[in-house]
Length: 332
Image (cartoon, rainbow, N blue to C red; front, top):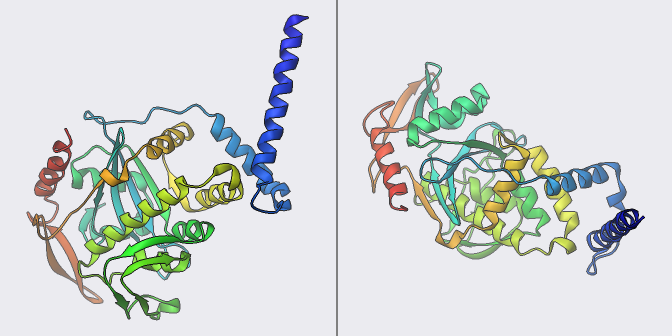
């Protein structure tokens, strides 16, 4: 009888706890009650979120130096003329509270399946994350454990849910050739200084190539935006913003592909919460300082195409491997 009483007490406490969670999540003090939470899709997603929260954290794979290396591909998304081009290619490495970002330029000319093409067109042509990951391993010389493919529309979606983010624009932007609808142009203008960017503006900010540093400047802006979004999300009161958590879950389902398992996703989330982004380092494969790439032009049926190739020649990634290895050695 005593055991039954204890089980009943435990069940009662669980019910009270769930009710308190319901009240905390769904009747925030700073907004009106939202009946949309009772929609079937939201209730199903709520169940999935609780399932994720109850899933034990896995153990992330690491290399011999303790780094977890993740290849992040950012594609333009369905509302763009070239939706599957991955103009953002970043190798992110996590260890303890450290993180290293290595950006690979979109114009790098690479060979895959016997054909040469720009690295940003690989996903559009082969849709094979494993082959792209293997190529990135050859380029960087690093073991890569996971990949994440992100539709950049997700940045717009998150920024809109957050009512925008504040970003320090380091130089005036006046991009008269920013792509618009139906292969037209839609000029993008933004003055330097602190700016509050909404979803549309944020997406243009990370995509524009108008920068004194060209693609390398764009890589820095993308890394800057990721840090700004992370900081704003971390400062949210989860209990007061559960509608946002649900919308974020929906957005992630629609706009992200990955080979991380559910338990590894949870471990990855917990790892990112501990990161000290102020101490993070961002690096680029560059044509100077150090000169490990060089500019070239390739003849195509459409005319000459600008590309970047390794300084040692096509498919010769020795200098790049040495440069990347030196980055990681400096963290030993």
